[in-house]
Amino acid sequence: MKHATFTGRLVIIGFGSIGQGVLPLILKHLEVDPAKVTIVTAEERGHGVAREYGVRFVLKRLTPANYRDVLSPMLREGDFVVNVSVDVSSLALVELCQEKGAFYIDTCIEPWAGGYTDTSLSPSLRSNYALREKALKMRGPGRPTAVMTHGANPGLVSHLTKKALLTIAADSGLAVAKPADRAGWAKLMQTLGVKVVHIAERDTQTTAKPKPPGEFVNTWSVEGFVGEGLQPAELGWGSHEKEMPRNGYRHEFGRDCAIYIARPGASVRVRSWTPMEGPYQGFLITHSEAISIADYFTVGEGANPDFRPTVHYSYHPCDEAVLSLHELAGKGWQFTQKPVVAMEEIAAGNDELGVLLMGHSQGAYWFGSRLSIGAARRLAPHNNATSLQVTATVLAGMSWALENPRRGVVEPEEMDFERILELAEPYLGTLVGEYSNWTPLEHRAELFEEDLDREDPWQFKNFLVI
Image 1 (tube, rainbow, N blue to C red):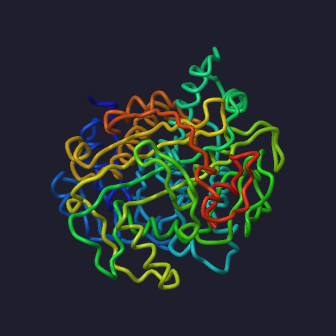
Image 2 (cartoon, one colour):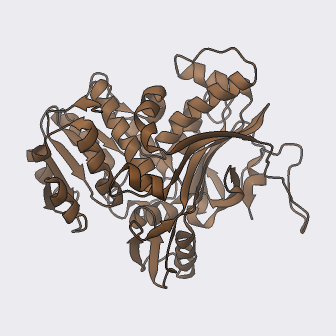
Image 3 (cartoon, rainbow, N blue to C red):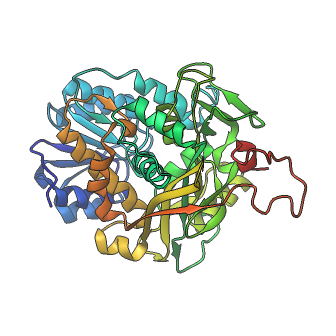
């Protein structure tokens, strides 16, 4: 099925695992001429995939000094930039696309190279919170649609959250209509009593051979994962929270909907739950959905609103990536490993990615995508289970942008969640919803005494692994 006809030129920036995976989906579902597609990338990898589909391949590293000279001749009104790169400023690209009248989509707000680890900036100023605040200032009515942070997460998980809320409401016996605006959605979450939202992901994909020392193995961009893993851990901060975590800080600017912990996210572990895995410990990796979901579902304003959920990522990557993180930490977080993105090497496993909504009358409810490596390979070439959850959502976001061409800068929460799920679902394996009575207090203090809040299991201190 063709989702839309696109007659302009398409520029894909970056051509790692996500770029290579999204190209065949774009050519399959958008009416676009391959001769009008250009890939601009800093690395040779993926050149063979570009030749396979007959698209132009430009080997060029974009920098603050050259990106306008390189990209400007490729862009005019009605063209489309798909940014799936690392080390290229999303904000700079959005600004250029707005000037040219071109569409834009990315999967995260990326800074220029070194922006995540620039020690001349405070942890607050190099956070996803700060990047988002800058992006929000670029809004303007009637401008070409620029869809920001629209991969699997951030992106898909925001749409899953809305669907999950409606399911919980129905199962709780509440006769509620689908909210029509942001205030309505926030009021629904407050009414249901949701206190915590986890983006709960367990990747069990595995290769046939053990990870050798000196390699960083992952099922998607190694550079992207390491970059965000070295950023401070960030989370949307709920109105029910009683105390800040150790080394936890508020930002001194902006919408005041989130906090950060002054430690690399890859060193902070939190307890969570998915249906297949059950209880697990994941890494509190910073992602912008933790901030945007918390902000969107806020009732009131500022640091002490009437209602806001605590929101954060709890990521257990594939086992080889966990070993890679341990090796990275042992080297003092100095990234010297050889990056390896596992694609054809994957022998088995699934990626279980969803949202876990907790604190409501039903306890906890997980809703998300369960996708196996076998299903991913049957559904789309050049993808694994992790990448396909991302690329399917990029495709859906592109289609939505073409259907809504003058929306300016938008976040996932502001889009039509039903339309996005309709477009992405064929590539998401099985969408699963499951209730649980799990709480982070389960089996605690059986071996050691811990500082827990047993009166309110949904306090962040109960999730945090010390």
